[in-house]
Image (cartoon, rainbow, N blue to C red; front, side, top):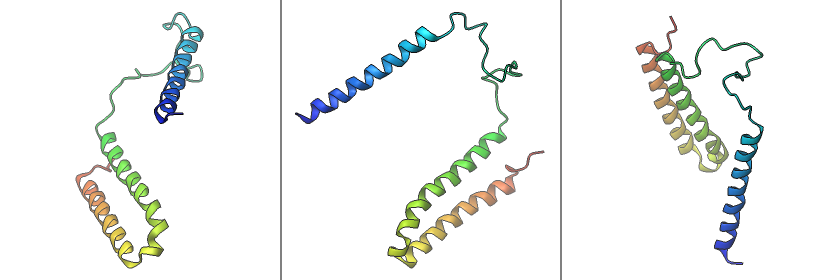
Length: 115
């Protein structure tokens, strides 16, 4: 079998799966979506789903992403630190120091203040 034939077959199976999900959604969805509210334990939502968030949540999100990326880099580092040695430890502490500079800056600017 040619390599491209396997890829085309996989794309065909993927397209058929997507079409099946759309068909099931079309057949099983309620006909009048205005009467069917979102599931919230039977309660009506207090605000619109597209309501705006306060700007402070964006800074918290950026801090979360920074520390999430820290963990993405620390997991592979933990696997090779014994093989690489002291230079890997120095590089990781430099990376953590750079992240700490960002946290201190956010703290000084009041990004972590809630009141």
